[in-house]
Image 1: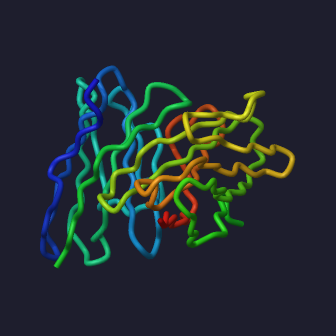
Image 2 (image 1 turned 180 degrees about the vertical axis):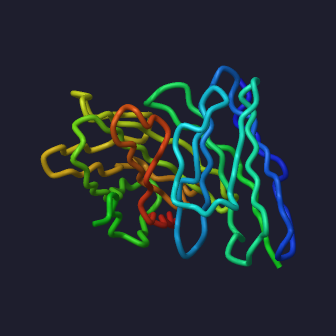
Length: 111
Length: 116
């Protein structure tokens, strides 16, 4: 089976812009989660989608949003980018409580 | 209180030796799961091993084993016969409860360097 894929892999934006990141889970996985990784805050949970519904949400401002499509692919959107949004954004898919497979991540740099 | 604590920011181990990476956790849930991931410099989080709170046996996956001591709330990762390719960041993570299947809380990580 193909692994979790994320596009794009690298992105450079300027403050105030918005960005959309995409994640395709492993075939058959209906749960998709998003995490932000920064040197200062480490790995932090953003949100989880299951069957097109947001099931969990982390402690991030409303500028961070996401959605999931009927084929389980997920997108996350960050509006009005700030310098502090520069991070590695990781997507993970799972099919049960014992699994959580991550994609290669999208490195976002906000200038 | 930190939910996941990794007290070793960095570790060195010689090739072919075994190494233990420490992880302690804090939860009041009876049902939880513990994960270990490897993150090379490329950034991808590679799943290594999983231990459920009700699993009776310590988890093993190839050269990786998890030393699960429930009463002490520790879930240490043991890597046997270290290889140069094991050099990476290692993260311990916890999933609490059963309703929030995919929300993981991560520790701060341990950077492992394997030397010749």
